[in-house]
Length: 259
Length: 317
Image 1 (tube, rainbow over the protein chains, first blue to last red):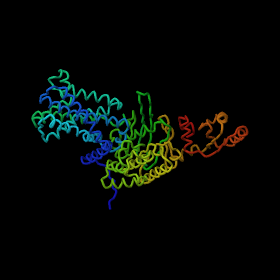
Image 2 (cartoon, rainbow over the protein chains, first blue to last red; image 1 turned 120 degrees about the vertical axis):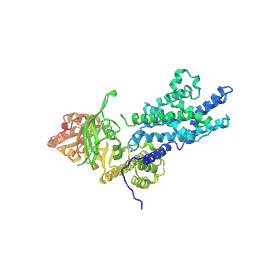
Image 3 (cartoon, rainbow over the protein chains, first blue to last red; image 1 turned 90 degrees about the horizontal axis):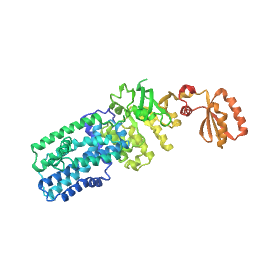
Image 4 (cartoon, one colour; image 1 turned 60 degrees about the horizontal axis):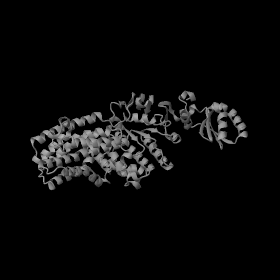
């Protein structure tokens, strides 16, 4: 007969993944009844931007279409890694949910990653829709390489820091909702995500180098058009550095306990 | 007795808001006891338990849990202490059973044990009928029972309950007190924050009365009551506010408490009883009112302190 056994919880890699899995299920429960609506809404922004740019640019070259489609795919990633995450964290913080999680024997990072995975589940379809539109409507011959999967994950992990810091530090959800569109507009339109870096003023070009989205757009464009090249590898290494730095910054600077 | 929590000179200041939430609090909590923190709203009780949970960092002082400094090792708290938050609002999208199961898993139980524990705890709180319902569809009282179940998951050594019977009907309140006392009998140390003095009196071993961020009385219930045993509680009931005012003035030297427009309460020394009864009889000839004399309760100690008396010495405690 099965017996109820109590043991002191020991943190190990295995336990960390169990915690993550449970936390993902808890987080996913918040959206399980509205997931279709969330996916549709998450797809709207990159889709409408894609259409706008298509109508705006007359006789676009293949290079321009490639940039517009991949740029909008980066938008989908920004929505996941920054917008949805920051909004979720900010909302949970101000509703007092952190008190519940902070009193459980779990790590802060697994809680953040659980929120992130929920974001990926809800916004990955928009990324896929954009890839399909590019392939079918714009007749782009994507070079689908297996490296696209780790690149997408790396891209999201590298930009997570922005979402986490905005979510945790924002004084109210209203401020979060004001900051996020501004950041998204800046990253989308004033860095080399949708626009070629040669068209940007020097100051913006230099500024864009501190944002991981610049390297995400580069890597994605290169991978989808030419496959796994040296450029993709270099940009991926830069994204790994961004991921590691943001991981340690989160660990050190983000407190979910009240100071 | 083994000390579980050793709180030394804890102070919390919020300079930006010019607030001192608690000042120079010293408290030792012993293994296996039930201790209640009583005090009016804003007294600093919740700040203190949040400091004990590591949720609020004290401005000065330190807290040791099982000898470990919780500022240095905050993970040690969540591994040993379970905290009851009144409303499980972080997980209201979950179903009842899965919320308890997930909590058990996060506290380190394996799958089989977590299933068994979830079944057992849901049975204990009497919500088997609702185990597949979403928490958000339940009543406020049922949600609080779920919070109690979540607090019990993982068989913690120390349980902290913040107002566990708040807004519960009498049947549910009784159930919660039963659960708390049973857990204590199994060896858990219980720390309670409550306004429900009369109910707490039935279950707690010691009481810390907190007012304006300070512990103004700390002792066992018997000891606290014994120290004011030399007094009797006099309750006066009137049907008219004007009569209440007259009585208030007549007994002003005894510092009566105005409970309502029609009720006064005061503590009198036993050797004054005859004089007071004579005075009451005289007054009763002029004004219509009822009175009763009863031994003091823990509530009298609490109300006395809450009524503005800042130190235990001033009421002879």
